[in-house]
Length: 317
Ligand code: SF4
Ligand code: SF4
Image 1 (spheres, rainbow, N blue to C red):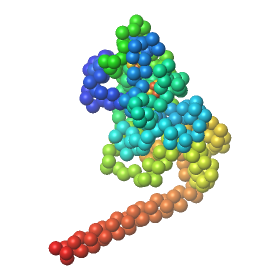
Image 2: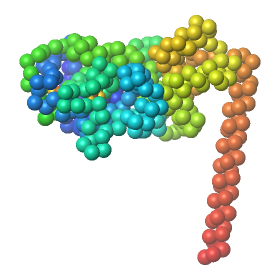
Image 3: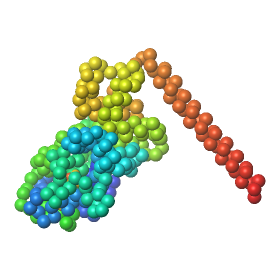
C-alpha cells in the first residue's frame, strides 16, 4: 500500500482516544520509518498516562488480573468504569482514572507499574492502526476476511508534549510494533474487535437484546464467570462441543477467551462455528419464540397503558 492521505471516514481501533488534530494525516505501512523513543530520561516521562480513555480488551483484562493477582470482579470494581465500545451499544470497560489528578491508577513517577502487562491501547502510542473495512466480514467469506486484514494501515499520533519524537532512535513500524508487543495483542483481540465492528456496521436498525448485551459484557470482562456459565449451566447439553475443546477451555484462560469470541459470534450474529445439538434445536426455537411473544405482549401492554393515560389526560382537559 502506498503512503497517501487518510480519508475522514477512516477510524482508529481501540487506540487511546486522541484529538484528531494530533494525527499526522499520512498512511503508513509496516515498512515505513519512525523516529521515536520513550524512556525514563525524557522530560515528559509518564505525561501521557493521564487524562485519557483507555478501553480494555478481554485479553488486557486477563493479563492485568493475573499480574495483580485478583479476580476479575474485583479488578472491574476497583480499576474500571463501564463504557460503550466504538459508539455502539456493546458494553465494555475503560480504566478508571484517579479522581484527584485524572492519572492512570498504575502510573508512578518511576513509570508504569504494570508495564509488561500494560493494555493494548498503551502499547499503540504513537503508532495508531486504522482499518477502513469497518463492517468486518461475513462468515465463511475468506476472501473478504483476507482483504480486511490487508486494508489495515498505520499512522502517527504526534502530541505537542511528547518529547519522544526528538530522540535519535529510528525503526520501522514493524520493528516498533514487535518491540511493543502489539502484534501479539492484535492477534488476541482480533475476533473480539471484529464483533464490535460488526455491530457498528449494523447500526441501530438491528436491536441487540439486553440478555445478549449482558452475555457480551460477561464474556468480555470476566472469564471465570463465563467458565461457570459453560460448566455449571445446561450449555454443554445444548451445544455440540468436542471433548478436546472442553478439556482446553476448562483449564486454559486464553483458549476459553478465544472460545467465547466464537460463541458470541454465533449467538449475536448467527455465525457458524458452534452448533446446537440436533434434539435441542426445536427447544431453542421455542425459547426464542417465547421471548418474542413476550416482547410483543409487552409492547401491546405498553401501548394500551399509553392510550389509557392519554384518555385520562383528555378527560381532564
Ligand atoms: S509523552 Fe511521549 S515520550 Fe513522554 S512519556 Fe509519553 S510516550 Fe513517552
Ligand atoms: S497502564 Fe501503564 S502505560 Fe498505560 S496509562 Fe496506565 S501507567 Fe500508563
